[in-house]
Length: 504
Image 1 (cartoon, rainbow, N blue to C red):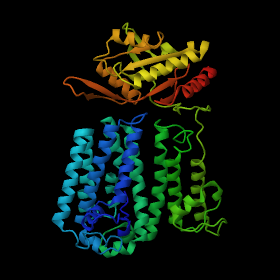
Image 2: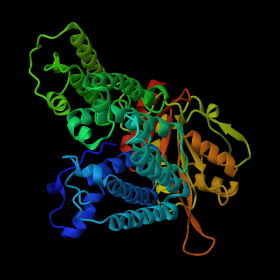
Image 3: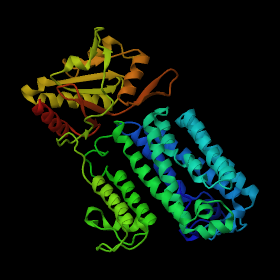
Image 4: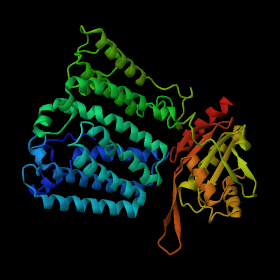
């Protein structure tokens, strides 16, 4: 992450002076970005909303440990900060906080944050967050930063970890999807930071730090900014290529396309900085305010005279923006639910029904199938979802016979075959319940990217289940098409099922 900080005026003026100094040590704006990226990892870790307990614990714990790392960084770089205009106002640089005070503050934040992660998220997230602390505060700050101009490249791995931490807090593992998010931020960090270093080159020269503009000059740095930008753009396509997302990922949702579009805008900004071009032609392909803000220079509406090399580079950047701004092709149909047509998950299902027969998605071909993961003792989400599906099926009349409900239990220890059969009969006799061993259930949950976990009850030996609240809809050919969030409503579900039924 960038180390750009707000001046003291950005710190809440209502805080007492001493607390304000401690607050500044945490680099609030940088930490906010770190936590934001961690929350994105949480949201992408499960198709529905993540469980609030783990999400809250993960957010607070990561926030505190990141703030501790920032304070430790201020401690280590106290003398360097005092020689740089950008950081000379920090409390440690001005001698307003002593080294023991700063160290104790960092240790307390790190300890509390780690305890929260261990107790209310999971141990894996705590260890990963602590490793990130060490990577940033020790490996990057103490070793790499004063040693090599490639410091931000190698040390950027720590700044790229937040999505992985958020993912781990919800899923309890580190999947390839989380590593793709990490890679995108890892490749974003060097061009972002080198642009800052170009602007503050004299500051870094006075500090004695071997930043790339100081050791190799501005032209060399601009070239690397440009090259990294193209590699970054390629990396942003990985979520689509890997099947993690739809076409030009986030499908047909204009709001969801924003992360890709914003990265492309920043890519254009880096190209502008690298080529030092004062103008960008064909700006009707991009939002003027966004590019102007990212590039940090005025943009006119007419093309200026420029070398053929610069014109070619800028034209490439413009085409990148044009591609990013177009909606994805998607499935060609408009749905109320989340269109996940072509997803590389939720492709197989193989579990036993209450009669002991193994059922797969092939058994339901010719019907539009709705698959929901839940458990029979669920007090609200599960019965509401199944009752709503039964209501929709009934409302469709004769077409309703082509709707198949499938209930997959995430609590095989308590959901016996007899109980599952009776539970389905209370909603619709045609609905099928599926059950597996704990290992089989876990495997199916991974295939569908479904989260579930036991939550101990107040009485000894009792528990409830946290689980993803949403349904997967398969078309008559057995291909996954939609993810329906809990609470979307019967009318929206009915409209989507009608669309799929009409398509055959």
